[in-house]
Image 1 (cartoon, rainbow, N blue to C red):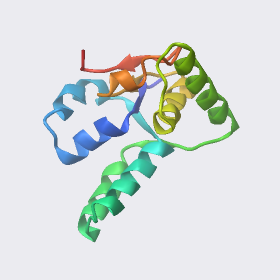
Image 2 (spheres, rainbow, N blue to C red):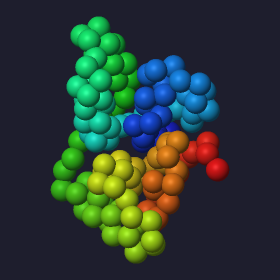
Image 3 (tube, helix red, strand yellow):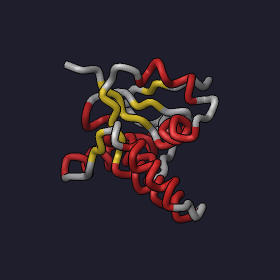
Image 4 (cartoon, one colour):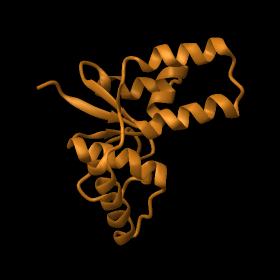
Length: 134
């Protein structure tokens, strides 16, 4: 079985932009099946519109995203989303809806989440985080 990870929007963005923080995450992405939540795609679509990207940059992003497998929603993912939200709240770490979808994706597939925003996910029970932040 190929090792797999879910990649959070922040890390996808770092890699796409060539941000210096991308280097921190390369070892966690190389030779792995890299999965992104549909929520990450929605967030990136919003950034395109919000920042008024031109067609060339949008096309570059579409090409870049082809290396990721997109995990779309279904009934099982909805259940995992609810579990993520409730467990985070119960543990005193409320989670935003978008982050909960990304966490739910990792939980559903039983694989780690690679994120630079570790604190966004701390209260989610059963979630394995890979992060290069303290």
